Length: 276
Length: 295
Image 1 (cartoon, helix red, strand yellow):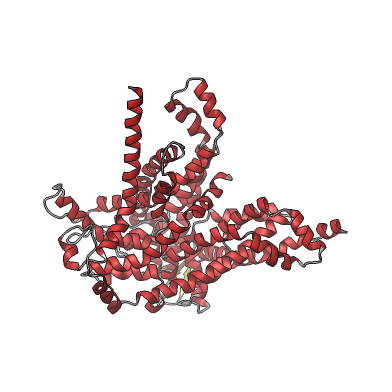
Image 2 (cartoon, rainbow over the protein chains, first blue to last red; image 1 turned 90 degrees about the vertical axis):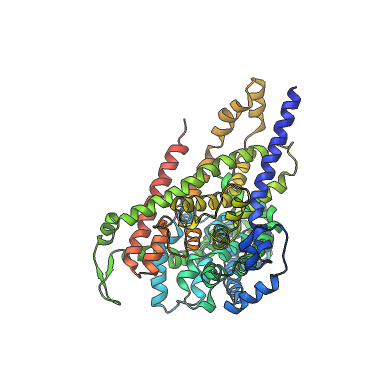
């Protein structure tokens, strides 16, 4: 009797889990299905199987907007941003992890404190500054700020502290290696697992960013993918198949990245939460 | 000799952290202070600004739209945060149970919506909710719930709830993962002791698990608050930047964006940015006080 009751509750639990999993996937599934359907089909009903209008929708997109140019703009911004973040965060994290200079704690608290500041607080000042420096409509102001990436420093610091022994650095020093040589040849490769995880996060956050490119870029051929996609509805008010396909093109790469790297992404998320 | 080498190197640490602080000063702190200065300016002509002290703030506080924006932002945040918290806690408890199968698959699936471009998600849901061609109306009609399509985009409450729902959908998996980490940090001995004392599972949950999850709760609360009060992408995309119907989706940052970059009233928008900042500080402090206090 008791066993039966607990069996029912186990089934209910799985039912709940599966239902939620379906809710998580179905919008993406419908997006992909509808991107292969014509506007007329979409206006008539809901479909669960793909149609044959993918190519037609794609041609409609290309006629109105160069979606791949948006893709390229996003890459041009995100890749250098990630490289800068990765290098300078590791540099900073190493400085905090393996040197004992005066005021270290205060400096580190300042970095943590900046994580509490809303991103939009300095946006208008930054915009005005870029106007005065003639940097509006340039990718530079979207890339350079990534030198200072607080959460990446935080994460890599704890990784270096826990997994790179002091003796290794001492051995390098005794062999006569310079500090930057040790950093480039020893620390960077050893910290790679942490750098990799945080780089994926930084890439995705940069890739998804909407407000900064919207504010700092003017000309439509420089727009990043999210900006292009956010304007897509105005351009194709009458063609839903094309809108769905545009959204799919912007979403599928991120979906793949999340699925492939889910394990390290999930472990990367939790470090900040548990280390309180 | 080796000791000497190692002792003398500590000050080189400054060199390693220097680039970060230069970038932080240039790209983060300077713009923040400069924004504060801007919040004291008012345009008199197209290119000339005039120093007006706290005029912009005074204007802000007497503008009804400012309060509408605050109300919308809080409503959207609360309506997604409360269910998000409940689902995340429940799922975290279920998925940390080793008897459940395919735990990692579920975890990945629930996490999936979290990192997907919010702007794209906004467009996706906007077309789902469309009057004539939207999938949502089709489903409701086919299921016989509605007899004709409903104009969701024109319904203030429905649109706010839709944004909350999207936020919930994007964030419950993330919050669940944070709670799972918090749960796995709780020692098994405590559960064993509770079992020996004959505690029921709900007693264990409320008397052991929840109190020990407090630091995790605080983390989730503060990060969600900071992120949630800055919501912009989805309301902006769903309403094509208008914030309508009837400003129901004008959140604080959307209001800020429209004031600053549509009306080019940088001073007023800067004051808005500081109002948002003050609000975040106050409510973070309250969270620390309420959740963080030891009993």
